Image (cartoon, rainbow over all chains, first blue to last red; front, side, top):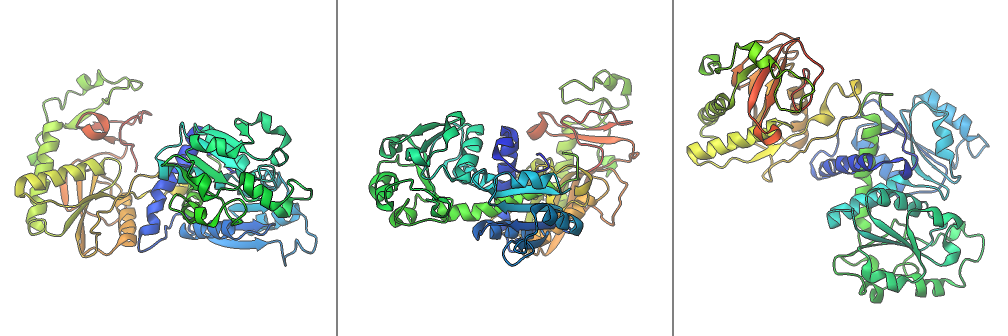
Length: 307
Length: 219
């Protein structure tokens, strides 16, 4: 693995599988009486969060603590950032504190890449603007593999607000690397202009895609990033691109329904679908911790500068 | 114990073994002296099986935990031996110690082995750790740490196919297939049918760079 994890597109097939296999072994630590490994004792992981996040920050914190690393949480609100400190100065501060890894979430695409040039430790991208969220894609891939036994050859539909979704972008790259066929389903206004260059196909007809899908990944409509009118009304969006129980019935028997959370119940996914046995939403959260443990172990568990 | 394992026919013919000495070959053969062949390994495991039965009251409450990679098939073979001799079915599992190693920072992060603890757990059981080669003792120290995170056995014992000496920690084996005096510059290669397609233990003199398939010099 590289020294940093900034983009799912940087991972080749072997590296991605190594992360998933490591996570598979680490998953059983969660079932033991002592859910802790001594591996990263004495190492410091800084969670640097410029955007609000509950599950990702807690997930990284739990992962680092289960590996016995020291965790420092740094959120932009109520910190020096609120007083106007730049990312570079914050980075130099963390560097001086001896951070072995910095987990960063930032509202600007590319911030983790810049940060990687300023700190000597590993940088893990926990979501940057509308660019990437590689650990989410890894945990999605891990969840698919656990439920369906493989990824290679599966047909995956990613549905909803692709334009603002770093999760969609990371998943397109990672799942394609792992041999899946990805189809994006969204209204034309919620697709990025450059989508033609992505290794996936595009559809505007959600019900037509369902019978041939093994995995349906529903994305949240990101109202907070919407500065324009992307669709006439939430109700109309939900009618055309929401997953309700009628549409669930169109899926093959074995297919699973995923959502990276947080959900807007009744908008992109109906409550009864979110709570059905085919939904993996709660599993995804649990799997997030083990996948992030695997990433931290592979980045920090060995000697420095040799990989 | 060494007396129970007379050298096999090929031993001493260092030059003959040298004929296989192409370090680039993919054959599971190493230049060096074959210390144990298939029959000797079988006999050693049979004897260890009997010793376990004797010392643990017929292997009641015994759990065999193999240390990956080659400790795992050895543990399975020992369990099969106990079943054959006394029709006792002993729980077998594996215990990966990678996350507990004391030399993690000296090398790049390594892939994890598989840990599988038998369903009944290890609390109040007699855990017999099984590994192929005992050398510095550091692997076993890590295994003891790993065990204590999984449960609290009544006792922990250690079975190894080869004890090559040079301990760096106060650790000793309870069951030994063969005591093998070695120099630190030598390497002991253990091959097993399950992992390597053949059974043998080879002592390799002044170590070559080749590590394919065999046990590396240091653990």
